Image (cartoon, rainbow over all chains, first blue to last red; front, side):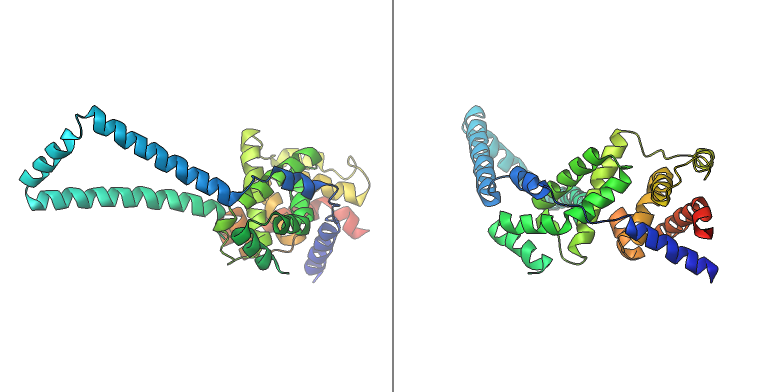
Length: 113
Length: 176
């Protein structure tokens, strides 16, 4: 019983040690630092990524002799047995899935509740 | 308007006013917790609180509403503190001998408040955080386990040990 009373007393003391802290401009400082326009920044990010991808594809196409490597790769793949192609594709899919799941889990662990 | 409504407005309309209202509602609790964790270093605690709210804003899409918004915020705030503490190599904690030596009731400030603050500051970080969340902020053991990202049993043990140390330190006050 005394143990219980001691715990109640301690909890009460701890709660008393948590008085309301006046805002005193804290909220204003946080709001001032918020990034401007989440939607706008998303659009910008997507545009930049698409632009870079397009330019990279164009450069690769021109550098590789107008995409000759694509024809070579297609010929190589056609010559391969179907089972080998399917196995390679499957392994690639599993690798991508594994890396993505790991990255997602790391992020979720920190923030999702 | 509930926290969930405000979160929805932030998500759908990127409403800074709604987020400001969330900050206003929770700033005291978050700053209070960080002040205790940061051993009353007010400037550091406020910097960390600011960082925690900014991180919350950037990642508000990952709040699923399964826990209370305040619990989610506590978790972000605790992560900010832990990362900072790691940088400052503070996570080592303080050993028992040091604790005994520093907490002799004859040598510390006679005021109960001072003694309590002193005793809290000297608890190892994992016990301090568990005690503050469960005994001061009123979180359940389960919620504290989510915030601290440790098993439920460990939270219970940390609260128990932390409480025991505090009780031992403040025994003289209790008797009075």
